[in-house]
Image 1: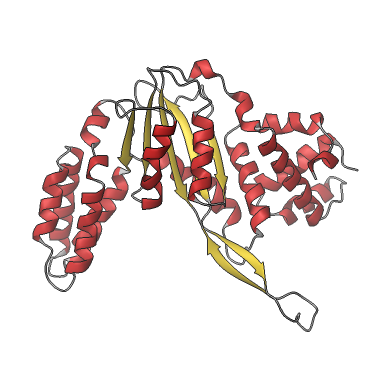
Image 2 (image 1 turned 30 degrees about the vertical axis):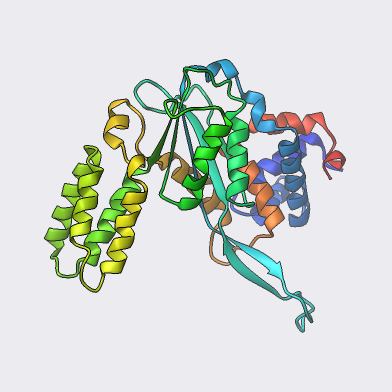
Length: 332
C-alpha cells in the first residue's frame, strides 16, 4: 500500500539521512506514518531491483568513453555486522547477538580530461559490496566491459598497496583484452609516503628534524621516479632491534616498485593519488554506516551501500523512474 512516489521518497531519505529512525520521524512530520522495518524493507527491495535491472548501466553513453582516459580504483571501509547467537534469549525475551568488524569494498570509475582532472560532464560510477575482493572485481569488470573501450582508450588502476587488490588487477585487465601499453598500475603516492614515515619512525635514534629531513628527501626521490634509490636507502638502515619492521617496509617498496612510476604518469597528466575512492569510502560508508553502537545485518547493509552509492554518484533520477515502472510486490 505504498505509492511509487512515496516509495521513491522513502528510499532517498533512507540513504541520505543518518538513520531509518530519522527518516521515519521526518515522514511522520509530513503526515505519513511508516515504521523503521517498513522503510528497511522498501529500501532493500529497491536495491535488489536496481541490481537485477543493471540500473547503473542505463546512463552509459559508450561513445563518451571511446578514446578517453579512465581511472579505476577500489578500497575498503569498515562496518559492524550483527549476528544472532544460538541458545536461550535474555530475561526480556531478546535474542542474544554478537558484532564484528567487516570490510565493505567500494569502487570508483571516472573519466579524466587532458589536464588530469575528473571530467564533470560524465557521471562517475560508484558501487560497493560486502561480498569480498572477488565480488568487487567482478563488478569493476562488469562496468569496464560495457564502456565501449576501443584501441585508443587508456586505463589507470590506482589504489593503496593492499595485496588483495594487486593480486587481481592483472587478471582483470587480461579479461578485458588490454595489453600493458593500454593500462597502468599505480600505488597511491600518499600511501607510499606514509610508509616512508613509518621507516623514519622506526629509527629511534633519530631526532624529529632528522626524520623530517629523511622523509622529505625520499619523497622527492619517489616523485622523480627514483624508486631504486629509495629501496637502497631503506636497506642501509635495516639494522638494530627494529630491523624486522624496517624490512617489512623495504619489502613493500620492492613489491610495488613497478607501480611507483610517479614521474612518468604525472608528466602525462594522470592522477598519482587514490583520493577519489577514499572520498567515496568516507561519503558512502563512514558517514552513514559506521559509528558508535551502529550494527547492521549483512543483507541490509549490502542493499543500502548500493543505493547510497547510486545516490552519491548523482543518478538517483533512475531510482525515481524505477519507482514508477514496477510494483513493490515484484521486488520481494
